[in-house]
Image 1 (cartoon, rainbow, N blue to C red):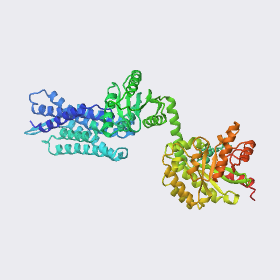
Image 2 (cartoon, protein in one colour; image 1 turned 90 degrees about the vertical axis):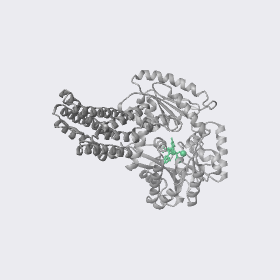
Image 3 (cartoon, helix red, strand yellow; image 1 turned 60 degrees about the vertical axis):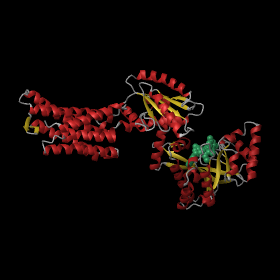
Image 4 (cartoon, protein in one colour; image 1 turned 45 degrees about the horizontal axis):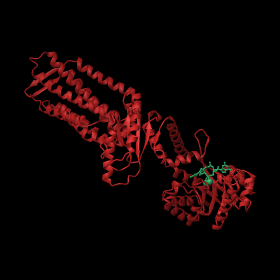
Length: 630
Ligand code: C2E
Ligand code: MG
Ligand code: MG
C-alpha cells in the first residue's frame, strides 16, 4: 500500500502538535488558526491514508463507505487550503474585521464542501497508482487552488499591511502547497499533498508560530511585544479585562547575574497566580492580565492578588535585595479605546507617580485626561501640517526710554474650528510627544520673518524675545538650526533674545550651555524666564550667560503681600543690577504695580497694563500709535 509519504506527513503533524501544545500560548488569533490548521492537516493525512485503503479494498467494502471516506478526505483538503487563506487574511486587520469579506469566503468554502459531497466520485487503482477522479475531485481541484492562490495574491495585494517576515513565510507555505499539488497532479502515484502541507506547517511553526517567539528570553514569560499583540486582540474583540502593572524602580543597582536571578524569581512568583496571564513589560516591569470569561470574578480575584503581591514586594528577593515597586491597578480596560492608548495611560501614570505614591487605581478619569492630551497632540500635528500655528506679540516697555523697545513672541494654535488654543495647553503636550522642536523652530522662523518683513526695527523694536523649551535646549543641533533660520530670514542675531527656564527637568546642562555659548557668540542675547517661580532662582544667574532676568507675574504680585517680601525683592533687584543684568517685570496689570516696579528699579515692563499679546496686525497698529511712528 503506497502510504509511506502520508505516514511521514502524519508523524510530522503529530510531532508539531506535541511541541505546540507543550507550551502555554497566549491565545492570539494567529495561534488559534495555526492550532486549527494542525488539527485539520492531521485529520486530512489520516483520511488520505484511509481513502487509499478504501480504494484498494473497494471490492469488499460497501461503496458508500469508500465514497464517504474519499469525499471527507477531499473536504479536509479544501478545509486545509481554506485555513491557509484565513491565516493570511488574519494579518490584515481590515480584512479580518470585514464582515462581508468573511461571509463571502465562508460561502465559497461552503459551496465547495457542498459540491464535493453531492457530485459523483470515481476511483482508479492500478499497481501503485491509486487516486480518485470525477466531478467531486474536480471541484476540489478548483476550490482548493482558489484559496491557496488567493492567499498568495493577498500577500502581494495587501503586503504592505503585513510584517515582511510573516509575508515571506506565508508565501513559502503556499508555494509548498502548490508544488505538492502540482507534482501529485502530474505524477498521480506521488501522493504528496498531505506531506507537502505538513512541511508547510513545519516551516510556519519554526518561523512564526513556535510559542517561543512570544516569550521573553530572560524570564520565559510572555514578552512586551506579545502584550501589545494580545491587548490589540482583546480590544478588537471588545473583551473586558483587568490589568495589574508592577513597575519596579528604573535602575537596579546590582550585577547582571543577580538581576536575572531576581527577574526569574519575580516572574515565577507572579506566574503562580491562576487565572492571569503574565507579561514582561519594558524595563523590569510586569503586567498581569485577567481576561477570563467572568469579568466580575476577575475583578475580585485581581484585587485580592494585588494586595498579596504588594505584601510580597515589601519583602526582599534573592535573600536580601529589596526591589522598590509601584503598582497600577486597572479594573476596567474600557478606560482606553485601544491598545496604544491603554499602554500610554499606564506609561504616563507610572511616570507621574512620585516617591510617596506606591499604587494608583486607573479609572475613567485617567483615561479621559490622556485622551484629551492625545487630542491636543493630533491638533498640534494637524496645525503644523496646515499652517495653523500663529505667533502673537506682547509689547515690552522700557521705563528709561518711555517707549516699547521689545516684545515677547508667544505661540498660539488656531483650532480646526477657528478657536485660539493657548500655549499653556499645548506646549506641555508638545514636549511630552516630542513635537516641541518643530513648534519652536516654526515660531522662531515666523518671529524672524515678522521682524524683517514688517521692519520692526524702524518702529523702535530693538529685539524680539522668543521662548525656548528645556527639551529644545538639550538638542545638540539647536544653535546650528537657529543660526540657519536667522540667515535664511536675514535677521541679525542681535535682534533676537532667547528666553530660557532653568528647570528640574533639565538633564544635560552642558548641552544647554554649549548652545547658549554658540548662539551668544553669534550675537543673540538671553533672558532667564519665570524668575521667582521656584524653578529659577539666584543660583542660576551666576553661571548662565544671561543678560536679562524676567520676574514672573507671581513675584510681582507677592511684592504687595507684606513688608518682608518687599525687602527680599529690593535685595534681589540690587544684586541682579550689581551683576549688570537688566530686569523685566512680567504680568504687570495695574498702575500701582507699574509704579512699584519703577520704584524698585526694574528696567522693562511687560503686562496687560500696557497690552495683552497681540496678533501681528494689531501689534503693528499698537506700535504705530504708541511708539509714535509716522
Ligand atoms: P511666559 O514665557 O512666562 O509668557 C508670559 C505669559 O504670561 C504669556 O502667557 C502672557 O500672555 C502672560 N501674561 C503677560 N502679561 C500678563 C498679565 O499682565 N497678566 C496675566 N494674567 N498674564 C500675563 P501665554 O501666552 O499663555 O504663554 C504661556 C507660556 O507658554 C509662556 O510663559 C511660555 O512659557 C510658553 N510659551 C508660549 N509660547 C511659546 C513658544 O513659542 N515656545 C515655548 N517653548 N514656550 C512658549
Ligand atoms: Mg517667556
Ligand atoms: Mg515668563
